Image (cartoon, rainbow, N blue to C red):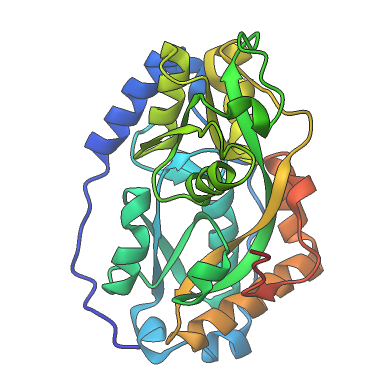
Length: 305
């Protein structure tokens, strides 16, 4: 892989301020601000794994990671509107400690993350991205989590939505370029072929929730962990609820690498296996009450669809 010089900078503060405005619209920043997880014990460097890293990573002493920091509990801005916190940063920090390198997260719009990875702006992407067969044609995934999907509606579920068929003919909000957007398109070819869902795609999950809160869309379709977090935190848990009783269509979530970057991919896979073996991985998931999504075995390119 040809790496590009790490000369870019991204100013986080304006984006974070915009996120704060969205949260206010959805019920107040005090209730919606995501909390960082509990501290996890530092890891010792595994010298063999450090030595297996690409030469430029070892020389730089850090790994640059692209993310979209508007997707709690996986990643979001802390109260300082600058620091990125959440499950992914905590896990990446421990992985970096095992590998003997620092990790540096940079916020980018979700639909631009993989393009930025292609352009060499990041060494990898870690943003709760679903591993799919289509994406595997271009990228490699180290799968670290399993998540279902949720239908998020206004509190009280005024439309009485319970399952996918209830979305047919209705306006539904979703994150642009996400797997959930693609799933809605598939529903329109199957369950909703005679009465298609009106798919409204937005640049962030918070934008999608605003449409539900305003009544423009009857629901938001998102990852189960994210939907549950938002339903329980925004507006003190009084703004939204999950309409479906069981998580739908479980899919793997992975760390994304270019096809050429096999050394870095394999080093992260081995480091993750070490964190699973010593219990650190489970501890990090427990900090976010996400134990149900734990994987026992680390898989490369484990997409089911």
